[in-house]
Image (cartoon, rainbow, N blue to C red):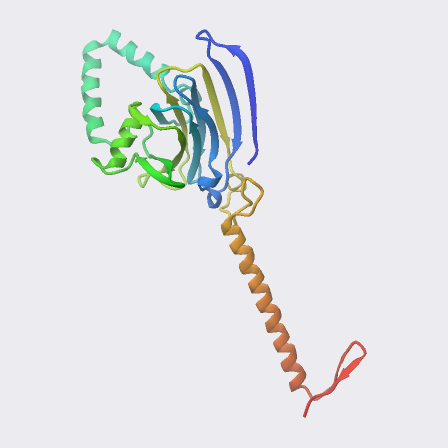
Length: 286
């Protein structure tokens, strides 16, 4: 996986330092926990981490991971847009200013809108208001395995639904460890529809460092095709699926060689003429 990172010592008016990083998306056949794009780390009241990505025709799912270095409340936000980059990169200030303006200019309309929004939230899926058409699943490591703890499309009342509700509202009490995030389309969206999104993670109520990671398109998206053979894993070793394909190809090649050999032997025994192999002449056996 190719990545680059640039940092700046400049701070904004709030004293927040910012960094940017780009990573290369992998093809769908290679999308798995082992190849999850690394978002770095966060800890309590230290860093806000944002990933800007897009699901495209040849990109149905994205995996990310982050190291949570503190016990405490974890907040995750997923937003989808239709090309509005400014809103993608800023997930809070835009909406807050818009709400404030509505409340000042039309208080009655604002109150009505809030009541309607509350009713919609009660009847909607967890991401319908912020990332309609997307599904977010959160995993953590337990006993050495990735375990699903939150799902935006889970049934209401389930443990996964309640956990995701807390994660999206910033009330989920996370434990230190590795967390994985799976972003995909839900069943209401066509598989070839482009779905740009921003995934933002914050632990606590404030941050001193702002990290933004942009995911570059995969080779499949560039080539406009779906790969059927996995590439090498990020650590330079062959993936399990790729190793199996190579082994199968070796078995097939061996079988073909044996078949050709048997055909040649049959030809030798079934032919009345002699056959010369180097300096040796072989006659038909009677």
